[in-house]
Image 1 (tube, rainbow, N blue to C red):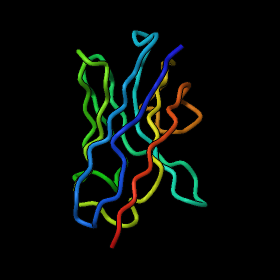
Image 2: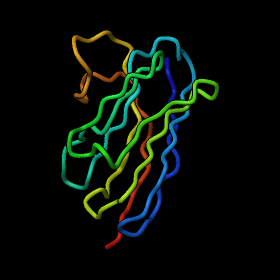
Image 3: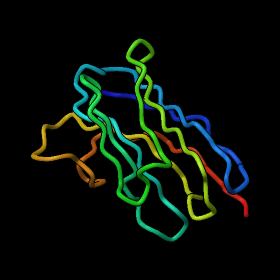
Image 4: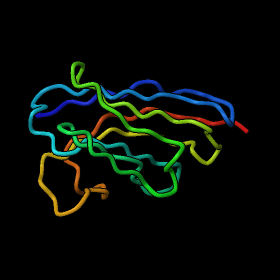
Length: 126
């Protein structure tokens, strides 16, 4: 089992920044990728970014490249999502997720992730 706990969400003005944290505990050695998704009201849960815990390979949704950065602190078993130049359309619940399976290619679909956090709300005001 893997447990995930997100933090760092909140209310920010457009153009501002936030850093989300995801503390990972349990069978952390089984993680293949650790990622972030987001879900706006009435919409699907969309892929944001993902990172390999061993080696640090990173992959982003095309629309978010340059504004969002995923990183990992191995000593703390924590994954971060730094979000800059935030826009009102970034408003969503942000979820941290882990996949323990080996996939062909980078896992970007919700169904490919086994474990999920409870989510943290990010609201960007205009």
